[in-house]
Image (tube, rainbow, N blue to C red; front, side):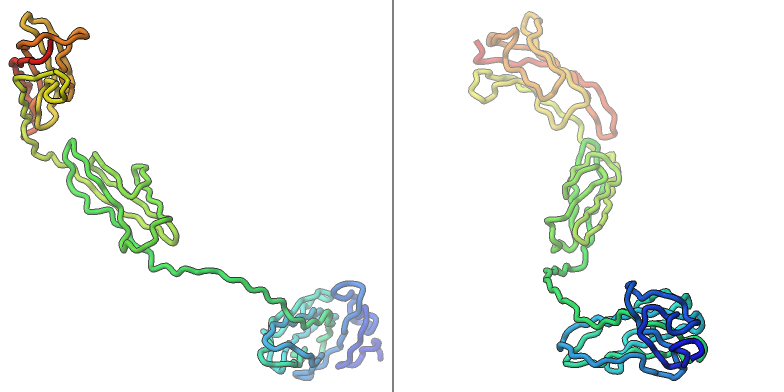
Length: 335
């Protein structure tokens, strides 16, 4: 022909270079380099089979159908429909208008019950001018199958988090706050609690009014709760203090020490004990500390000793008055 072997539309050749079979075709190598390709001067006939083959297949097996397509001229690039047993796999592949640029078609097909399959490449480009292309590396191969198993645990919907109702907090008081998942059926092994105080346990003890926030995190869990404690003046009873009048520091574990009995911590405290000559044998600023009947590294003699106690008495209205009590105590069983 005028332009070479493929001068006529609807003809093809197997060659290493499209320009060898048509002088207007670009000089290109095959897809992998150094080999041959199928070069076609396409025709405008619809649904023209470019290539078909019937192959044996294994039932219930996945196959990969692939091929590479390029344009030999830039006008009206070819459009290829890839079919198995007359059924298209995916959308047709449109070749690039850039010559010598290879594009891949790739699709997966399952054989089902079939033992054979007819695979075809069909040209859908109907333009008479152009539609010149090459096909290479047509492949229809079974895929390897690998299986594995995994254990899946379906958890119920993630729970909410409750930190309790809060309330009022009196001075000197404390409250225990417990974070609870609602509902409590959620797996607890992997739950991490984080409080705004820095604590990381489900419960905390608070001593001051304020807002406390806790976050619970874990497998598919991220919940938060807040509890508020408001300050309360809280009416407190006045401090009552009673002093024994006898004690026996003989080491029998009963009534061995002398000190005040109080209904609550006083607002300041001081106690002194003196002998009959006015010599101080004991003193303390701590209400919980007791006199054990010793002075100057020794046990004092039996007898009467005189004490004085100064303490702050906080009343219901919040006022504090300074109180002083005096009296005597009899020591028996000393030396």
